[in-house]
Length: 591
Ligand code: AMP
Image (cartoon, rainbow, N blue to C red):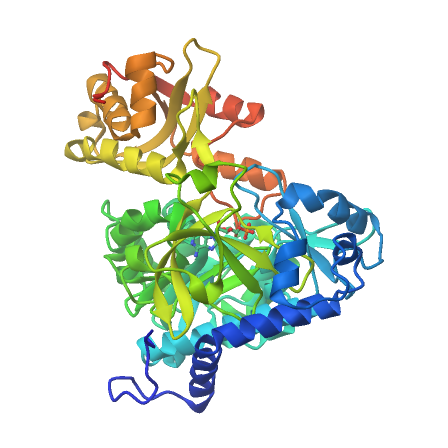
C-alpha cells in the first residue's frame, strides 16, 4: 500500500502551515484506517446503546464488531421509514439515535423518485464541514496560487420545509451554505452570500453570473456541485448575456432582480463599466461558443464539479465550453454520509476516484458480482468485507453505519476499488445499483444506457449534432413492450440536420450496444419491440428540471433521471415530441 502524496517530496509545491496540517491529518487517518474504523463503530454503538433501534436488535450494549455483525441486519430505507416517520412527526425519544437531531437532510432520491429524509445533528454537520475544509489543502497542493484569485461558484439553496413535528427539512447543501463555517470561506468566491441564499433560482443564477463577469480577471476556477450545474450556467449565459452586458454597461441592476438583499448588495458593487460590457457582447455574440469559458475568464485553471457517475456524460460539453480545462471531481458524498475525497483531483476525469475517510462512519462493503450466485441467491450469506479488506478491481456496494442513526444501511451505489491511499481504499464511482429499464428479463442500467447513447451519438457527428440530454421509459402498453429514449439534440446547421433514416440507424446502434439479454429477448423471444427515439423540442429538459424544482427538488442536487415513469413527467415529455423514429431491423444475436 502506498501513499499518493509525500509531504516531504521536493516535487510538492511549498504548502502553508494550515494546509500542511490538513494533509498530515489525511495521512494520519488513512494510515490508521483500521483503528479509526474500530473506534468509530465502538463510539456509535456505545453512544446509542439505549436507542430503541439497537435495543430492538438486543445488542445489549455490545460495541464490538462481531456482535454488531451478528445481530444487526442489512437494511434499506424502507426498513427504517416508520422510525423516521415517527421522528418527523415529533417523537423526540431516542428512536434511532441518542443525540437530539437538529434537522432532516433530504436526499434527491433519484433512483426511486422518492425523497428520503435522514436525521442529522449539529455535530455531524461540523464533521462534514471539516472534511470539506480539507479539500482546499488538497487542491492547493496541485494548483499553486489559488489564494491569489477567486472562484465563480454556482451554488443554490432551495426553500426549506418542516416536518409535522417541527423539524427543519433541507438538502445538506442548504445547511452548508447557511453555516458559520461557510461564511469564513466567502472571500474565496465572486458571489455574495445574498446570491447563494436567494431561493429564487433565476435571481440567484443571474447574480452569480453578473458577479463572475464583473470579476472576470480574478476568477481562477468555475464550479458547481455537479457538472450539470455548470452547463446550466453556460446555457443561462447564452440566453441572458445581453441583459447582463446592459447591467454592466449602465451600472444598474436588471428590474427582474427583485430580492431586496441582492439589490442592496449589488448597488454597492455595480458601477458602469462600458469596456467590460463591450467585451462580453463581443465574445457572447460569436456563433462559436467553443472555449468561451477560457475567453471570458482567461485565468481559469480548472473547473470544479462532480463529473463522475451519471455526470460523466457532460464531460464532452464541458470540454467544449472550457477548451478542455481540467475538471476536478472533488468529493463523493450523500445525504446519508460523507464518503470521501479525491486526493488526486487533477487526474483525468474518467480516472477520478475517492478515498474513503475512515473517521466519517463505519463502512462495510458488499461484494457486487452479478455473475456470482452469492449475489443473486437469498440463501447465500452476503459477502461483506471491512473497509481495509476490499480488493483492488472488485466492485462493491457500500454499507454504512453512521453517527446519525443508520445501522448497516445499503447505500445503493456501486463502487470499484481503484487502489489504496495508505490503508484506506479509493474507489471509482461506477453507478447507482438499480437497473433503469426492463421489459422482460433484460435489465438495462444507467451505465449501459449511457454507453448505448454514446454509441448512437457517433452517427450524428457528420451532422455536427450533439445529444444535449436524454431520458428513457420502458413502454409496456405496446405489445411487445419497447424502450423509448427521449433525446434533446443540438443541431448546429439546420440545413444539415440528421434525417429520419439516420435516426433510425441511431435506434439500431443503441440496440446493438445493449446487453445480450436485451438482444436475446428482442431477437429470439421477440418479447421486446423495436427501440424508439423520440426527439423533443429544445428546452424540454430545462422545463423538466423546473418542474422537478417546483415539486421540491433542489437545484443543486438535481440530476436528470435517466429513466422516468411518472405519468405527469411522461405527459410533459410527450407533449414536446417533434418526431418519432424506430429501429429498422433486429440487432445481432449469437448464442
Ligand atoms: P443526495 O443524497 O441527493 O445528495 O445524492 C447522493 C447520491 O449522489 C450518491 O449516493 C451518488 O449516487 C451520487 N453522487 C454523489 N457524489 C458523487 C460522485 N462524486 N460521483 C458520482 N455520483 C455521486
